[in-house]
Every structure is written in C-alpha cells, then in structure tokens.
Amino acid sequence: MNKNLEKKLKNILEMENLKNLKRIVYKGNYYKFNQNPALKKYLIEAKGLILVETSPYDKIWGIGLSEEDPRAWDSNQWLGTNWLGIVLTRLRDDLIKKEKI
Image (cartoon, rainbow, N blue to C red; front, side, top):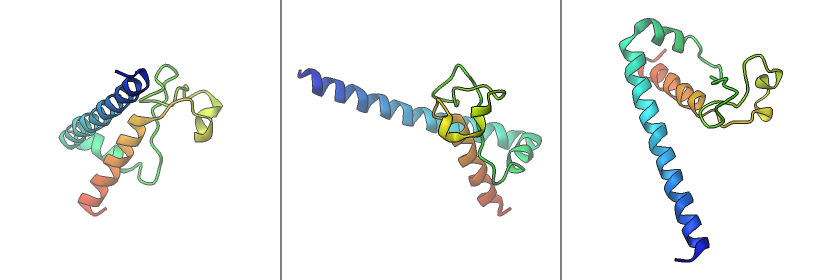
C-alpha cells in the first residue's frame, strides 16, 4: 500500500475513534449528572460559561495548562483541545434545553 495513502487512512481511523470517544464520554457524563442532582445543579449553574479541563499533562481532553497558569484565561494560548470542557459544555446546554431553564 502507498505510504501516503496508508498514513491518510490511519489518520481517518484515528479521527473516527476520537469521535467515538467523545460520544462515550458524553454519554457517561450524561448518566453521571442525571444520577446526581447536586452535580447536575452545579453544572447547570455554570450556564453561559466555557467549561475547561485545566490539566498541564493532557492536551487532548484538557487545555495543556494548569489553572494557575495565566494563559489558561486566554483560549488562544491553550496548548490543548479541551475536549472534556467541550463535551461538558455541550451536555450542560443540552440539559438546559431539555429542562427549559
């Protein structure tokens, strides 16, 4: 197989796996927050805020920075993708729509 084609195929498969991971994390957190009213209330009270996973060691699920790092306040300076924050923000917004808050 052509090395270029092989690399493209590998990248496509990795992206599909990552999309599946996001769906799994969304579903797991959906059940977590719906089973715990206090946590759900806490999540919903963050309405309008961008949720962020501050982890200097995780550049996929987090922003790649600690919460003490001043760059954490500027999304243009994040070193990571913040997928967990994105998933939780989407979940929060979905819960708000569902409950018409």
